[in-house]
Image (cartoon, rainbow, N blue to C red; front, side):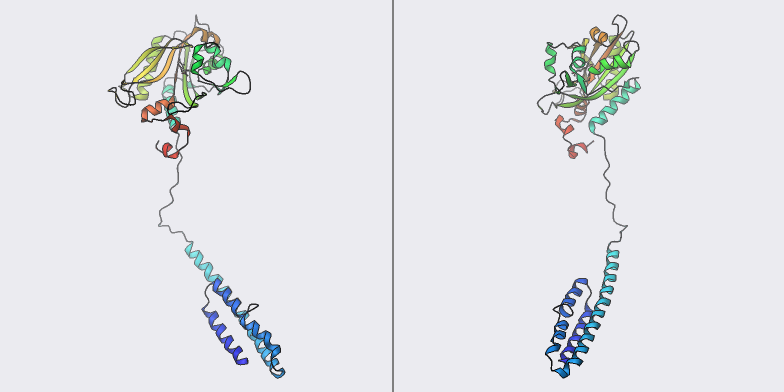
Length: 344
Ligand code: DAH
């Protein structure tokens, strides 16, 4: 029995020397000195030995258990140290590896076009004037010479709020009234502003129309502003925006808040006027509406139309961006698909 114990001790010690991982160490503990380990079990059998052998065997068995337990603790410390060193080594930064690319943000294509537009108008002396997105029906329509029964209201199906008469602006033109009253100090100061911002229309969303989109409105009020000022200024804007040699044309049109009213076309920026899918083979692209501010609107803004006159215009930056890049679907702008946005 004592021999068996010594052999077991030998075996356990040898095996322990070969243990190199904490998993293997746990295995070893279970096999030899754990609750059901071989050494433990043997120690428990002491009582079954003939009385004269018990004392010697018990002493030696206890001693072996203690030696193995100490050896186990020493091994455990060693392995922990080795494993720490290994993990430090593995976790080391390899400075020769290429770095992870840092994603840089970018400006939304609509924002890029807006900024281009601001810069051009700024050079011509137009300040950015911010007007509200939430408007009253009165300012959005009535003060712009669009009375409740006016057929032009059909063009702007509107988002209403729970407050009667409060709506989301359907165009940036109501900003003209605020600019005249506030910025122009009720008809006492000349004005040169652009009014950019989001507009909202309750429409079916299609490739050509969204329920929200930007517009940039422009307003110039002064004492001798004439149609020639309007045409010259718009033509200059178009040249700066679309290229120096781009032809511009004005077509008679109608808006309730301008008289006379015009629509502005530029020679197609993709085909140069030869005719293509984007200009629908006309050679021209419509870029904005404009006109001389209607006397009723001037009066609603606090200006005396016998002394003051002015021009106004309105354009859609998304539409301009679409024309410039041949984008066929306006829904890309607000669907936040990075595959689209990252192209700009
Ligand atoms: N408000 C018009 C629209 O939403 C655009 C417009 C046309 C603005 C002519 C103007 C203008 O200032 O003179 O369709």
